[in-house]
Image 1: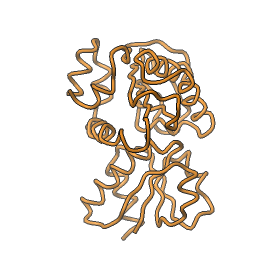
Image 2: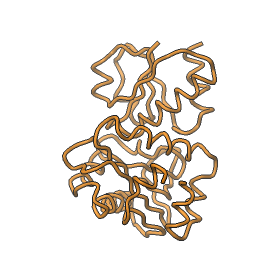
Image 3: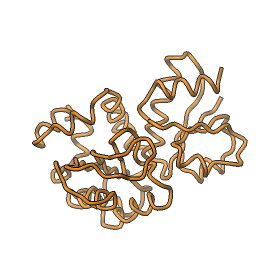
Length: 147
Length: 89
């Protein structure tokens, strides 16, 4: 199993979600990290606080946000969550709005997730990868894209 | 030459930036060490020649001896390559 599929624990993927704002999108990505046993609720609040404090820099590519916060006691294990949005939401990013794919990221420390992110970078360096994710209607399709 | 990729938490955006910068440096045949760091660490270390960050973070890196480069699209190796080679060559 790929590192991304291991990071996306059962219960961490939600496809075609409807949210009204970036805050709700981040909240949902945090809830999925909690539901899949990787973080506590405090981590969700930290992800939102991070964006409130530093701006929408977590929108790292057109259509793609990767909310995250520092390693802390709120992280139980390194993991990711994935939300695809039915309607895009604006994060306030000058170039990469609107966002349709939200990857929550939680890391136990500064080192253990590096190979995971390397795999992630490899996938998203492929042109059109965000659209490939959006065209998935089942979790199994998502998981095969990451294998 | 030392390059530091910077983001708010030092675990996500900065790590992706670091990886893609290393890829670009290999392609360009340029030598540099690249580290990922959060804003506070980057501000405290002061020994990097170049800081890479997304535009929102750039404002927080002013007043340091390093050249600060804003990268809009972390996965755009063309953009990173163009900006890094301009700064390094």
